[in-house]
Length: 83
Image (cartoon, rainbow, N blue to C red):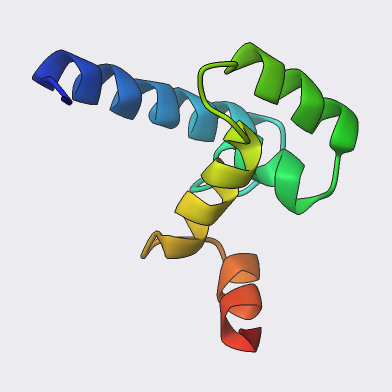
């Protein structure tokens, strides 16, 4: 069951991840984990997946979440249009 506190913390985590990604030159609307998966940075993907051990395939799930997000970066539109 998702509580209001859980929802709030999840949203804050996503916002901080997107801010961090933008600060290092990535898309402002993309989470760091999704970027690492999209760019094929396997070392970072393994590291982040271990950090979020309670979420199997964390980075891949973030990437798929971004793919379904309406305000996703242009690279995601390109990938979606090929499917």
